[in-house]
Image (cartoon, rainbow, N blue to C red; front, top):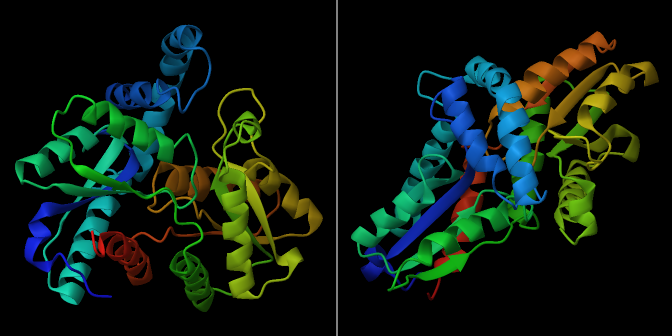
Length: 334
């Protein structure tokens, strides 16, 4: 595909957006991050006034210390894994587009909550004279709790601007053949290192069941992802399953739950498990600590013999090529 913007590439900017992370693994930093995250009405749909007292009086005091310890267990010398990987994704995508199309695009990473902020990155692009901005939320499967939250934040920021840039917004990419290809190939590559397990589990981030009942398409997107990947792998129905992790609160969430499933599988004769989290474009707390440490321990304690987590797509070449495909198709003839 040829691009018509080669002479004016300085007028175009790409903003990759992920959820967010605390600045450091301390109770104070975690409290700041969680407060911003859990105060979003897209994330928690309890009436704001009621939730304000629950959040500040119960949730934050009880969770911050525990969550900070979890972050500390995965923190790297470079910082939060989510942010570090995100920056690597930006660098890889920038170089790939430069190599393939001989253009220098401004590509930046931002977080919906925390730093680097969407606001700061939009300001940077404004100072560079960028007039066309492509927003790519790094969530393959759409949900109002994630992708729509990015859209809301974008609108809040731009509502204060008099001269608006032209915006294109990527809603999802769960159907993109390159995404399915990258997922299936990452599993095949893992199997080259280790033999196939008794069961392959696709563990997606959970969502309250009520969200789906109100029209959120997230479950359907997850199911499509899992089934198309399984089809590419040639697996039988008894060789895989789909579960949901990271539930919060007492309401019913999408089932089956990942942790409860892992407790039961050894009693059903499943002694080895490979688990992948397709909803995460980069490894983070939910994959490196909740899955790789907590849920592994649950499975082993229940009688399982072997548990392996298949890493997120992170900076795999085929993952970055997927991003390139999305970017170039959106920029073509813009």
